[in-house]
Image (cartoon, rainbow, N blue to C red; front, side, top):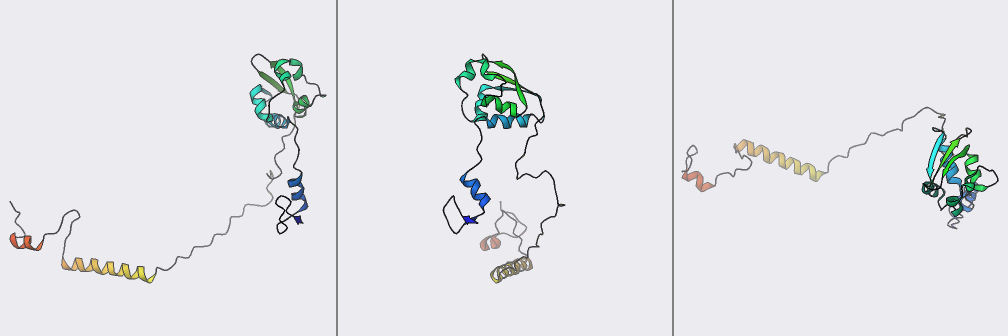
Length: 187
């Protein structure tokens, strides 16, 4: 265990393997993105047509100007770094169209696509669900209990009085009760 090399904090400890990854991350070649893409596509197809713009996106920078001008740049010679990227993935250039700006790659051999270390392909243990604790309900507070009790008592009193208050209609006022009999309606 060593102090955290990223922040310099001596209280946060890292293992030597993690510290090495922070200090010196894995280096990839310029054309590593193209290699990875071709390995991935090799799992389900044997011919891939890529535009120059798409290749620019995969490698994270622009292709050199000779790639746009000369077909010889796209030759399958293992001596060049860029050609090595698609040859290592098991692909060769089948066709180059400089006018329309695309390249057609053809798979010549099978190269397995490596998944990241973190993703496990084999399950060692059977699925075990997480334990769930039954939630304990809190008893209501004394204030809430007393409010509910008072509300129930008021409703019981209103029912006992025989008061019928239909929603939207106001009860008759005291002087209206004296003026009209309960069965008569005012004209």
